[in-house]
Image 1 (cartoon, rainbow, N blue to C red):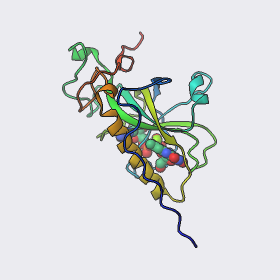
Image 2: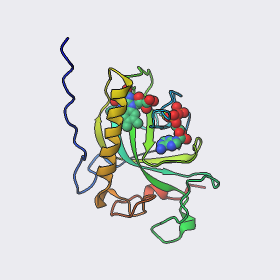
Image 3: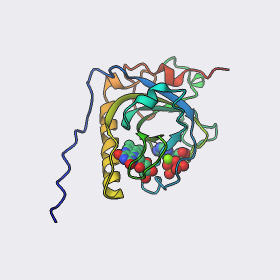
Image 4: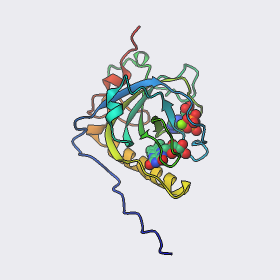
Length: 203
Ligand code: ADP
Ligand code: RBF
Ligand code: MG
């Protein structure tokens, strides 16, 4: 039997240095729900799932299934260990910023490897959390596309590609035009407008 051809080298950075281009940024929000319980966490890539309502978010019904990257803002409960001690915010008033911004990479689609019948949206946040945050309000700013979703011969190949996706997202976001003015947890600030992520909840 002939060996499978080696997978082509993937670029480690995507999109223009000048920042996101139309149709991005795309916005999505909801509360973190339980996913398929397949033990993504055990594989080292926990994914926070959001409900997908294609009738409310028409763009998601038409978007290509695949991997996207951008930022997630989380409103963690007051006693959560991952709330940063000193929160940077654009106006210097740390008490007004309830949402904290983290870099993320996400999958939107049917997960052909698992043959789901329903479209899912799951977000891997590029931060090591000490505790889960099921139920937390989460806002997503999708800034760019990484690749289409694929099927895989084995779970190892899937994990390998997801790890490359994480590196692509990290490096692509680590540019001034891709970094929010409002600040990213553990990182600096840039020139991107991230105000939607941290705006106050409507009463
Ligand atoms: P499920 O099938 O319920 O989605 P996962 O194994 O995918 O289970 O774990 C997801 C949960 O793990 C999230 O809902 C969140 O509470 C927690 N979590 C911890 N660290 C992260 C992270 N870095 N990114 C996303 N979720 C995380
Ligand atoms: N599932 C697939 O079947 N094909 C994919 O190409 C794929 N890409 C993913 C990329 C990222 C960044 C993430 C977070 C998930 C992806 N998934 C994909 C979903 C994956 O199967 C799911 O998270 C499993 O629960 C991992 O065990
Ligand atoms: Mg999940």
